[in-house]
Amino acid sequence: MNTRTLVTALAGLSLIAAACGSDSDSDESSSTDSTTTEALSNESVDTKSAVTEPEAPESAVTEPVTTDGAGVTPERVVSLSPTHTEIMFAIGAGDLLVAVDDFSDYPAEALELPNELSGFEPNVEAIASYEPDLVLIGGDFTGLGDQLAELDIESWDGPAASTISDTYTQIEQLGAATGNVAEAAELVSSMQTRIDEIVAESGDSGAGLSFYHELDPTYFSADSSTFIGEVYGALGLENIADGDETESFGFPQLNAEFIVAANPDLVFLADTKCCAETALTVAARPGWNAIAAVQNSSVIEMDDDVASRWGPRIVDYLEDVAAAVANVEVGVAAES
Image (cartoon, rainbow, N blue to C red; front, top):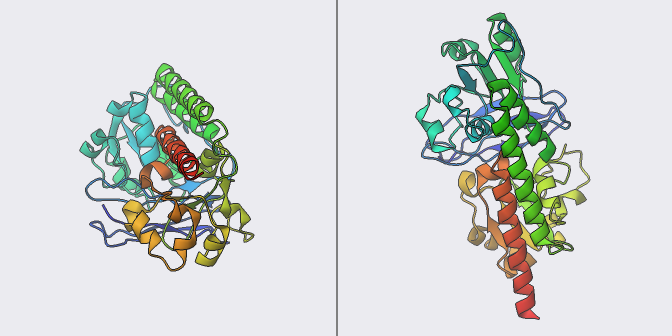
């Protein structure tokens, strides 16, 4: 899938998902009230790619909204969030899913489920046709929860995480909601252990190194106040997007002059699948051959999906970032 999603964090905080030379021509848009928007480039598997899930500035996860049958473990779950679909499978609750949204493409088992639902413009009748007793929402900005409640269907809203701690909370809540408490606790524990190990092994190798995280070729980025910004911050990296002074709600649109002047030591491309950006296309941009990251072969092509979702695979992303940082250190040592 080669769709392209652009996120413009404007005063209206609207989410724009635009198609870009794709097999799927859908454009999704969803406005958010007081929440920010996370630019997601979701994993391409056969037919779909970049999608954005809204990010809340504060922890805003909620327990399932109860109608009838409170406390009863659901038997039929619909997920309208790629992240929550991944979490469901990771905690052993994937067999409860009867349908997922059109961007839920991981793990492979998710592709075997009906996946025609939209998480951005949800159709309550289409959702209800699967007879779910629980619907997972990745940020309820359309009043879907209330609509489902009118049909006596429970819902759970887990907007995009602002911190890694938010991710742990959502995993634990989904575990409780689906009767997989022990599995969820084990997943959280394993994630915490792996993150601690990665950070410990990296040591202070990231200290003093700057980076640019690219969401799309129009230079949208993410600063340290965002979820993905915290991931980089765990390794002590300096985010050049923090130098932007516009009111961007965490996702500033930089410009080429700003990036070249900042001269980042590393460039992480989270637009390789949506927009076909590579180390070669970056090096070919006017003036970019003067950037340290380009000169030292430290333009890193990342997985759009893993970069944009706040589920279990974010640990894999951190591991890839740590490896890139280690390579920069090796390169510097070789030159000296």
